[in-house]
Length: 457
Ligand SMILES: Nc1nc2c(ncn2[C@@H]2O[C@H](COP(=O)(O)OP(=O)(O)OP(=O)(O)O)[C@@H](O)[C@H]2O)c(=O)[nH]1
Image (tube, rainbow, N blue to C red; front, side, top):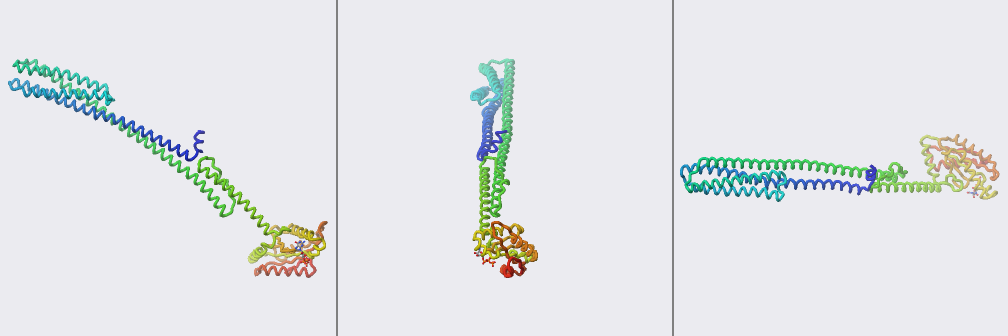
């Protein structure tokens, strides 16, 4: 079990290699099996072709010769009664006899050589039995030949043969007939049996080969399906990672690497996926560092170094934005304020104290306005607050609250100081210039009317 799990996390090349080896080994077994079986079937067919069929033919020929000889003996008997010439019959007998002996010899040779050359592999004992039956037939036939030759020599010497002699000859002849028929049947049954066996082996071969072939196909299809599945799974994973990375690059959004966890497999595609995973983590790290760096840059560019309030960088844009807000019939106001006689503070207490005054003023204002109301230092000791969703009266109240707070500052380290305020509400027709001019007029009014007061326009 552990071995199979180890194998599953193996290199893809190794996996494909080992699966292909299994398939090739299987195909090799199929080929070796086919060769062995084909050789066996070929041997059986050779036995049928080179032994059994020629033997059947020879034995059939022997049977025919035997019958011809039988008929010839009958003719001889008839012709002798009629005192006819018997010389052609003697010649025919000699021919038949010679042919018969030749066929018997060739039948014996076929069986003997077949056994010696191991062409006969099945039913060897039966073939040997047939061989001895051929020998028995030959011996019987030799005796019969002697008897027939005795007939011819008796005829030549004009000696009459007794009827018992002819009857004995006829009996002998009939026995030889029976022997040839038995021999023929034996050989035919052998041939038939071997042919049947060969046919059976052919069928078995076809069946086993078809089964092995189908199994090889089954294994092949499964291996192919496994390889395709593995590739698709791994490629899908990698594709997902690349899409996530691409999305993050386009949207500049953070990457959630938990969506595509590290693969535990050791194969090449999993290694590639893990490399991409690391690349994504590095990219995300760099992206967030860059984001932080950009934020710091933006903060530096838009923040006043001394007080920490917004500087003039986004001032114009902020005004345009609030004008848009006002165009939607939503109230928005602007508070402009300036430290009174700040030059005198600098001159009396020094520039550093002047700086501290500006810093503390910023701190105090930021503590007492909403987080959503941006505070701008427009230059020197002049500041502005954009107060959204407050109309002129509400904005004036805020300014008045701030003015009083500043007035009441009681510090050991800072000189007391006052601030003049100008307040105005945005109208739909405003431009950055018009709203600023209006609020500046209000501030100027506070300054000219004695300072430390809130004026509106
Ligand atoms: N300490 C300090 N002084 C600054 C800074 N920026 C501008 N100032 C000084 O602020 C003073 C502003 O003086 P004025 O414009 O005459 O205004 P004021 O003296 O406040 O008089 P009113 O506004 O009319 O009440 C100048 O002396 C500037 O040098 C700063 O960052 N720090």
